[in-house]
Image 1 (cartoon, one colour):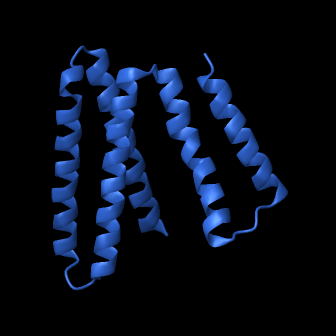
Image 2 (cartoon, helix red, strand yellow):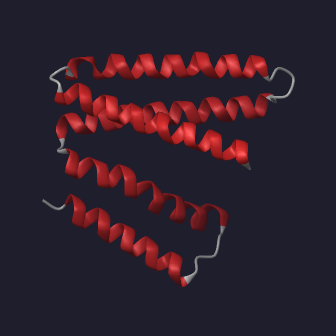
Length: 139
């Protein structure tokens, strides 16, 4: 559990710093370097991940490796989409959707795809999440 929390913290900081770097470059008038910075960050992450896989040689199954690559690609595409959205929309519209939207999507997908039962509090949370995203982006 302790190791899991460490990796969760690293993931949290990594994703947060990627978004912070994008916002900083834009605010500093260096917006033209955002895509290059994003590619460099993910390339460094890929190299770091490859080194980790080599360090765990024999203990990582191909299925786990493919899953990890898929998650990394989704993360890259998500950050790239945020970057593009920030180029066309104000941050007060983009970030509520990016932060609140996935929570609602995960809950709904779990219900639709895996048949998870949604309690009253979960349903209320989904409705509140949708309302929050709408109200925060209304402007």
